[in-house]
Length: 229
Image (cartoon, rainbow, N blue to C red):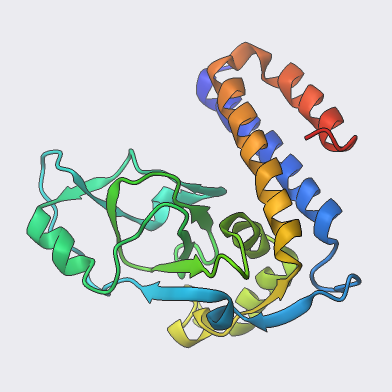
């Protein structure tokens, strides 16, 4: 198998395991059989920021200042490598509302609707068009829980209901501030984050050791459902 295809397959395997852990710990958020508290996402986050709705002027050389586009946000991750670059002055102007930081959660409003990722570096980045930034209140919600809540059917259904556009779907800004989220106890969310962190570390190792992906995944799957992960 080609490396690119094998790497994609590995990511899909690990993502499916993360979704399984989420379901195991929190159940269906739609049916809410655990009777978790519910709240507006605006109440669960200390900061929600929309992008500047025009394209920043880029430069044709590398700088320390990176523009994130919708293509950089996929499957719970934010890619800070395959980016476009701007000057320091442009960076400051486009970040006048807020500067993204490690732990922030990004959501695409369009092209596609609902792709999500967590920023895991301290790189100097800013939001390109059609991106939203969410910074959860630490005492209320973890970033990992919000990422996988966005991937869950409960919020996906809200995207469908609140989205607009007959040809190209998009999420209006008021909708992005009005999503309803479930709020399990923060200690349980933190336990989920710990498990996701270990899973991400193992995933990185598996990608490096490309030929052993299947074996590593099988071992992790067994550990996850025996409570060892």
